Length: 141
Image (cartoon, rainbow, N blue to C red; front, side, top):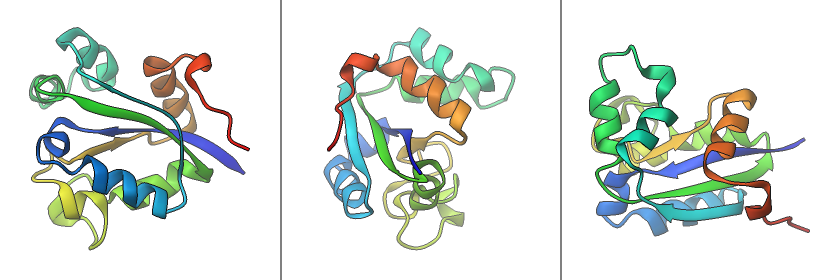
């Protein structure tokens, strides 16, 4: 069954010029991009997006990092998109990520880990709605 998930190319990957390689890898992995935009999150937006982590010790540094530069936000579509994208991303900590995953190849550390992806259908629905309206989605043949 086709499903959709949110993908964010984070400020570290944008800064080091990895956005194009990441998008290329996603398309070669069978994901269709049905919405995309480059933006820069405000502190309030980053805090709202990551509100689920508000009580965690890394919340402040994560939200500061996420508004430190531009991000590329995309909605990906594929069969089992959420689990497949999680596998393509690799472990949160790039030191623990498998060879050939986005985080192993493009991340620098556990926080500056190049990409974000939704972890469940409910999370994906919330996250996609955070960044996109239904009118911004491209229906693919």
